[in-house]
Amino acid sequence: MQTRQYSLKVCELTIVDDNEFISFFETNYPIFKDYLIVINGNVSEDIELYLNNKQLKFMVNVKLPVGQPRKAVEKEIELIKEEYLQSKHRLEEELTGLTNKIQNNLKVLDTLVRSGQELNIDGDLLLLNRVNSGGKIVIEGNLIVTQIVDGAIRCNGNFMMIQASPKANIVFHGVEVDNSYLLIDKLNKVELINNEIVITPVLKETNWKD
Image (cartoon, rainbow, N blue to C red; front, side, top):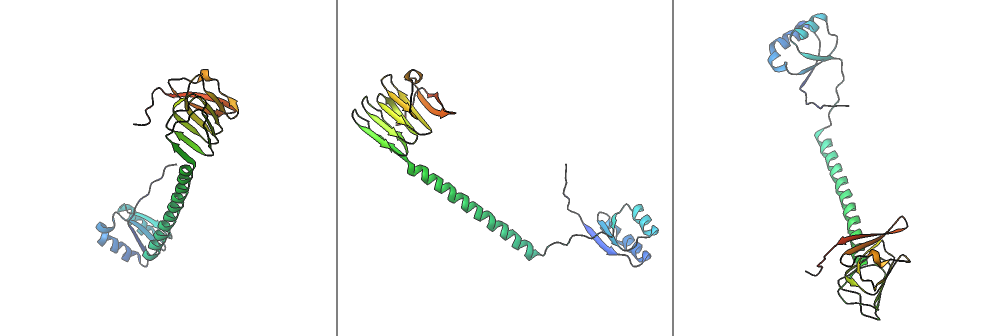
């Protein structure tokens, strides 16, 4: 369906006398030649013939919609603005709450996880260092380790991103990850998709501290 919207000039009048009607348009034809003429009353053959000869566009006994008063229109506009601002405010509150939740749930550390040390994290962790052999991270959320992992990882989040050596012991959602699938020179994304562990190499070289 195709539609078009027009802004029209409309002249509405009621026929009282045929001669008076014709005389009026004869005098004012230059003004009303581009108008839509809405006529109330009985249109005689003489008037119809005159209008057609003048190529005037007309309609008969049509009830035109009445526009709203200016104050009513302004009030309606204000209500629309108020609804928009309320919706915008609600959306901003939701986004702020979500952002705070993510920020409050993320822990960022720049410390070496040494042999014999164990980190237990409830949320998400970004570790800007390495995990030495004998070191261990147990985490319920998502994990990103930017340096090599020689130690143990126990992750139950949606994903983890790590570089692991052949010495590493990586367990994701209770399943031990085969180190041969973790490329040493790349950052590997490990995630659980349809109950299967999917490993995707992400970056060859990553300099997170610059």
